[in-house]
Image (cartoon, rainbow, N blue to C red; front, side):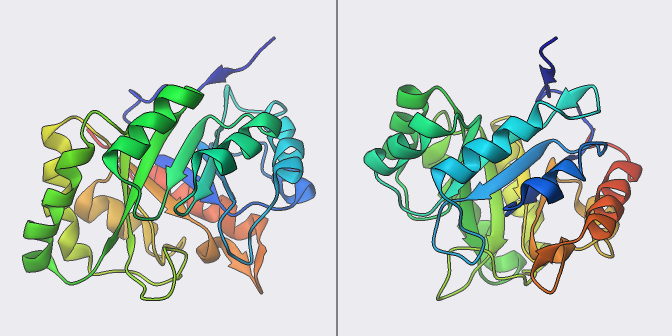
Length: 237
């Protein structure tokens, strides 16, 4: 029987584990309550190719919980041809765009591939800067399905492993909420700070990668702890 995909209307805080590369590690996670599994196609030590992604996506069908996670491809400033090359081999559920992709490009991705689209934005500065920065979301309304905030880094489009100033979150959260668009938070998250973030700011989802690794390798104990901490801290309602 085909497993049901997670319903985005569920109010429980969503968990996205990003940067998966190993089939064996992914198989060790099949009992966990995870909503999204991310595969990186941008320049990164966690980068994988379409063939490897296809192999990993097959594992999602073996998930032991009621609903299997949705597969997310993470890209930075891709062109349509690059996306097509990946989608021809690995049928992603979600395309996450971490670069300077325009609203028109995001809309074209949704139309061409029939996927959901998450648009990431780097955050620099605190609450005062965020009040203005949150206006960046407006042109993407109607073109994307979720927003993601990550730590600004002058050299990399995300994946820094550092937190940004969380006091910036409310301005973005309020802006996204005006349009009914969920907000995910990334950047320096760990099992130790996930509960604090949810309790203080209540985002719709958390996205973690390096915070659940040991020596650059995904650590099932840390992943389990992260998922448990997130799911324990109530809902986004």
